[in-house]
Image (tube, rainbow, N blue to C red; front, side):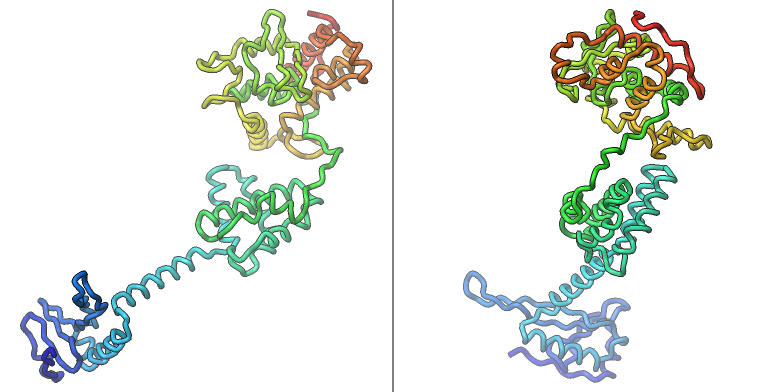
Length: 442
């Protein structure tokens, strides 16, 4: 057996001055280590005894610090040492236990830091959106809708990781069918907050505000058959086109071309140079890009032809309106153009480009409605027919029998009408009253 160290008194320990390691007795393995001006208690223990490949026992020795001397007295050091030796006899590695405790504390702190309320997460997302959108009105809408509809249900004292899709449904249910647009935007904003929380490990599992979950709980939103796309009054088209023509960029030109041709966004964004017959002043849209899946010939006004002729030829694409990074423009590119124009108007303390019936900002598809309203109010007075207007919009005209016997696409009549429409759009002012060309003019 190893020789036991002599049990030193507190006075004897105080007299130790030279550098070294001194066994102080009282507890096996307890030492006072002196190095420079430092004095500290150390307990040496043997833990984890096991057999090596030769079958001989291998002992791991640990030096465990018990604190500085004299801050920790001799009696206190011996008491600590006895407790640790008791743990060792029970099969506990004190250093590993200490490290495990440290890790547990760190993990508990990290878990505490990760656990946030819905509002705490929402405020971060709103801050990110403020940097992204730089639109005070849009940010205010984010804040307002969340405070009004989401916080009462989703910020009730629980952490965000305690919320479920049922809580999200409760927040949306009061307005899901009665204020459909607000509810739709609110759902998207709540979804963005949960997406942030998931990325920060503050929420686990699927996003409870996903459209699939919400529709499962609340059903699909009912569509109002009478609800129309927001459109400008046709008498504002001259002023709008004047503002549009001041804007640079391929998106602005695509929107201008869409208005001049009364075409749908997808038809314009996919338009290719070989679809244009500059001599005949026509644009042939293939069936695969038409809603009715039938080829459609668009008659082009002089203004539309001039716009196309001024477009730059982009190497590597035959698209007339390619996206800056290649491929087709997105539908949002044209929508953003309208929104940016509206924002510019409101910043100048002007009303902006608003549909007076709905109070909403006009959308790209709404310009087709503006064209149709122009025909209803003005075009028919100058000899243009309803059939020509409907064909220009690529709508089906007449019954199946009438369609079977009709062989004319009224191209000349439509040419005159589209030229009058272009002229009407070129005259700024509240009334936009212009002299119409005669039907049949080339």
